[in-house]
Length: 97
Image (spheres, rainbow, N blue to C red):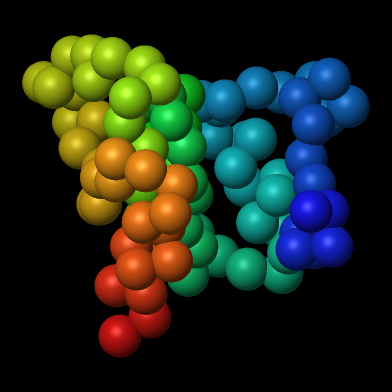
């Protein structure tokens, strides 16, 4: 599966963790990309969705692994929500059009 990833960022190596903006920005810098061109996929609203949206990334939430949490948090609303990993290709396609 690692062949599908160009950059891997591990919190124990960079001494950062999600939802830290630096965690997301470090990975984007290594990719030579910017937040508006990136989509983060995650199963935790607090660390994945809020973290990604705070830096300007799009975010896809895979529900069912963690609770939705506080919906009053400004960046807690994912751009797309999926119930199953098999739905990710179609969800990602929405950002390519």
